[in-house]
View (tube, rainbow, N blue to C red):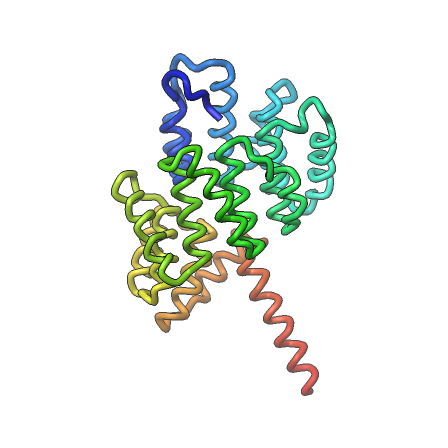
Length: 292
């Protein structure tokens, strides 16, 4: 985490990244008077923004062997996401780093490890490297992992830790919204207000629009959700969460979802919704064959 002493030169850059304004993060990354530590963090954020935009090869080619350890970890994440067929060797490299006492406890390596193992749905392995926290990014990742494990009680404990550190931090607010969505019921309105607050204070991004849209769907406001999601689609036509949410929303408003689903299959074949639908189709086929 950045030091609490003196100005936080990376505050705006982090906020852009956390709220999904990835191009804005890249465009506004030339910041003067940075310490060497801040330069490494800045470069990590910029390359993570490129990863979020799908520019994996750019990250892989720009980060060379001489780069600092945190940047090497970000490069490993780009390699993992860019080449699913070679992910075994990428995970092997990651395990070697984690076992190395000189670098294994580095916060960025642990963040990348948590992200990769969460993608692998190996949540216990992810938590092995993230549970001790140490940065707001790691605490926020813990909240996401616990939500995926359907352990909102543990997610709430992590959120309390974040609130004690900085209640107004963007990641604290985001984590609170994620948890409210997971808990459901009356908490959905609280999540909506968090995303609404973001939309009033910051430029609108796909992440904010999707957050508001998911809240609307939970509250049964599918027409409003569709409007928000189409606005998000205009900002990024390949965003997987926008496409996935449009598939679900279209079904509820009685419209065809096939175009959005086909786009999602083509651009993000590993997406959880694509996998679930493929599994359901396989089960349906087997059921039909049993009656044949």
